[in-house]
Image 1 (cartoon, helix red, strand yellow):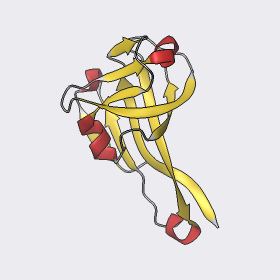
Image 2 (cartoon, helix red, strand yellow; image 1 turned 180 degrees about the vertical axis):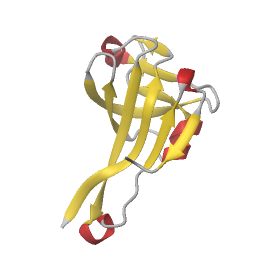
Image 3 (tube, one colour; image 1 turned 90 degrees about the horizontal axis):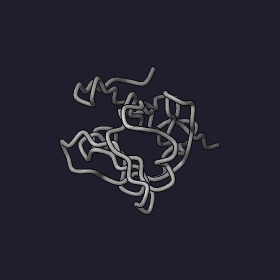
Image 4 (tube, helix red, strand yellow; image 1 turned 120 degrees about the vertical axis):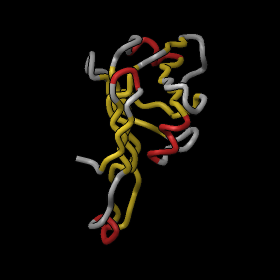
Amino acid sequence: MQLKLLKSKIHRAEVTDLSLHYEGSLAIDREFMDLVGLREYEKILVGNMANGERFETYAIPAPAGSKTISLNGATAHLGKAGDLLTIMAFATVEADEATTWQPKVLLLGEANTKIIKRPAA
């Protein structure tokens, strides 16, 4: 049996930019992506804490250290600068591996500046 479990999570990521005319995706600071093991073009589920919107898209890297979280394309209609997002990716694992599975979680502070890596809650 296989189970779909949380693999990567960036919690309280503050939207810094919107680009309606970009083709799509969510641009995420490369440093944040690396810390939680998100890959370029990986499918992600995003929840907007400000308005309750949930949507699927894919991750693309923004410059490392930029603190950028940018809603691109149609997703730009689902939030505004300053909104806090939860960004999640999932993995399919074997049931025996699930017993010790630990997702990589990153909790961001104000303006995406305080980085706290911790086990999932």
